[in-house]
Image 1 (tube, rainbow, N blue to C red):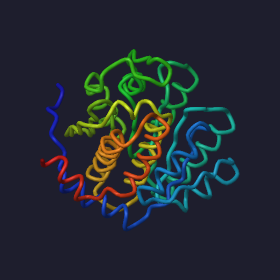
Image 2: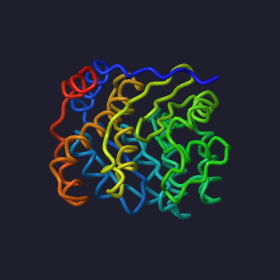
Image 3: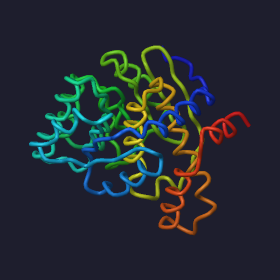
Image 4: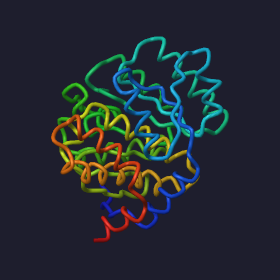
Length: 269
């Protein structure tokens, strides 16, 4: 049975965002080649510190030093897969939370098998679109490349199954984001279609989710906070921009200037 979605607690999210800014978590990003620079800038704008240590020989060592680890399989290749395994192993030994972004899982066989293998190592959060989450849970959820062919609410049962089996939070993103654990569902509506017109906004959100996991605030509140932050930044940036290029710049500006009081005002209005 699907749990009824609850509106997230904006006041708790505001406090979590303040904690993220105060702690400036160091996020170790093993991410895809297309989005590394944008991801780093999003993390900096939000108040976190990015690092892109990619060699297998160093990934485990650095993951043990970081506040959180991001695993994004967007441009997966064998050397990166080995580095990811090393980083996750070190993170689990040191209690460092790690986030899985299963990009295009369901559409391609090797990455699907690889991400299902990684589930055994208990990601703190899984962040993906509906097609990715459905496929990761074992369903038929192949998207159109990296894009979902399903609405986010279609993945709620799959998200709950992943949360119950692996002890993870699951963030299903779309027009409404759903944050799911074994007992609750929180819904965060909002955003703008412009967020789908710039490469890397979803991947960068996964990095923000990792920052949220490493900031010391309650995890559900912190992940909800960065979901809301990205949506509100997009809403604010869209009318300031003339197209996707200026939108990307405006989005970074908004991510850097929005505070917890803005989240509370937006979702309590």
